[in-house]
Amino acid sequence: MTFDSEYFNLGYLDTLSYKKTFVHRLDPRVKILVSFAFIIFVVSFPKYEFGALMPFFLYPVFLLTAGNIPLRAIAKKVLFISPFAVFIGIFNPLLDTKVILAPFGIPVSGGWISFFSIIVKFILTVSTALLLIAVTSFPGICEALARMKLPKIFVIQLLFLYRYIFVVLDVALRMIRAREARSFGKRGREIKNFIRLISVLLVRSVERAERIYQAMLSRGFRGEIRVLKRHRLRYYDILFAIISIAMFYIFRNFPVVNFIGNSLSRISK
Image 1: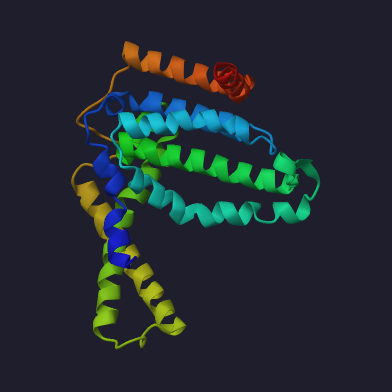
Image 2: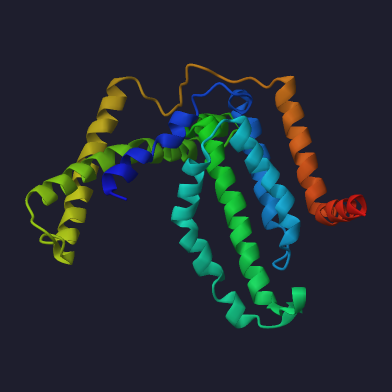
């Protein structure tokens, strides 16, 4: 996995947002509110709840299939940042050794259950956030946040952070290529050279930011997000929000997994 491939892969989710599927046509404000409600419902489960989280996979799977989003694109990014979730919960089995389950006679401590619960919550929330970008685009999310009356300065800074990180990465990419062209083998990869590269990148980023800001002012920028297409709330946007949040409420407050298991056992008999 090279720096070049990761750099050019950063904007891949935005390219997926130009599709014309049902979820792509939904109002971005509705998708943000539904995704936010989804995350709230998921993280509200107690630490020992593991099986009850399974029905919540329906929502990211729906976005994945209805939006025609490649599973590999989302899975790679979730896997890339998964060590953070593993590091958060890896000590739970050592700190919580009380046995609370014994399936097939195998004792399972509460620490292992809470650890897997953290992993499942991480997969659900992060994949939903990535899919939200893939079916909306980051500029579309920022435009929706502005229309939802969030502080203008926050939305503008969020948009600029995402938009111009590609400019900074372009500078970093050219610096890394120049270093590799002037080095042989592992030469030039010492920590002192890395510190020098970071220092030069910081100086160039500040200079580029000043030039970009002056260019924006000369083109009439006055601190507002202007878009060519503005979404409007339609009946199916509201219907999608109502059905989705109602399903989240049912998954959170009713034993859906037990009901499905009992139904399948009755059918098998």
